[in-house]
Image 1 (tube, protein in one colour):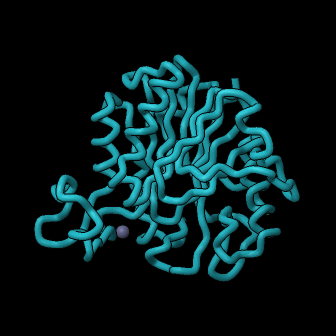
Image 2 (cartoon, protein in one colour):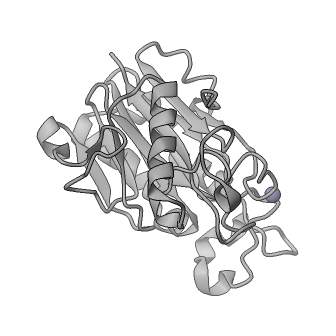
Image 3 (tube, protein in one colour):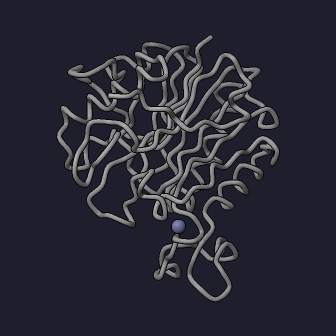
Length: 260
Ligand SMILES: [Zn+2]
């Protein structure tokens, strides 16, 4: 199996102490609806194959320890400041049984060598990095996350728990359901009025990436420190998994880790 090559954010590539990437479905061992590098265990795919995909992904960026979350479209944030915080929850390779998994939709850490993984199939993964404090985060923001502003909460956590300065924080927004495909016919029930100005004038299509950009900005993250990959998952099922396009599908991963 060829090594997967993740997409990366140009501005994060400038920092030597950081590895990161967004993994398309290219390469990987999964078949059928899950074809490619599916890292999601709760998708219906064969768990042994998913674990092989996870191991392949990690070896391609030189990581041996990562944190997967049980993402629940909530607002809880796993704060990892010591090995004790993460005991039993670190995925170290195929066959490794975990005794703990965080029910959370974001994780923040200053630990070196521990990758933070977010799994998505239309939702946004938002990676965050404060190069001075050497703190990273990874956020899962679907539409419920956008409504609850989990991105803003995560920046807050970086500030209050790790002493980060938002003006230094770099952010990268993964491929996700684009404004071309983010149709919300029940938006009057699902999305608060305060976000309706992100809707197209005449159609119920929303720009969730712009919501994220503005939520970052509202916390003090500079616009020039935000990079968006821009690809739409539903339009590009050749590259990514999309729940909107195919109800039975995999999850692709965004990963970030401090190395030094
Ligand atoms: Zn699209």
